[in-house]
Length: 116
Image (cartoon, rainbow, N blue to C red):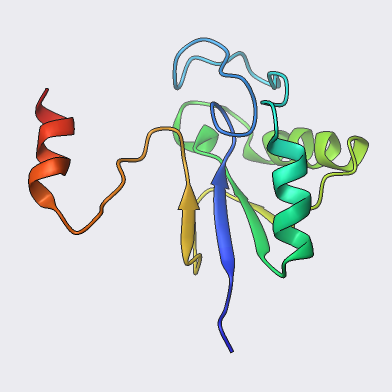
């Protein structure tokens, strides 16, 4: 059986980015990005385990549990499915992140994107 675990970033991927990475106001979430809620519902319907992943713990937010509670409440209020909220991807097999660089078996393309 294929394990389908997907880790999805929060700021700039599911919600609008507020400020720059690492400068978001504490206990604040932007608005849902268009299509995000429906995408998560579809992924859940298709059997994916949805791991919400946030780097807020690494960017100076004093209380990680407050961030988890904030996220959990927004997802519950908006009836958006998820399985866990984590600071690391763990055993995820797929990742969605606004800062990622796609790797398509070509390091030349990756280096071009990095070094431009």
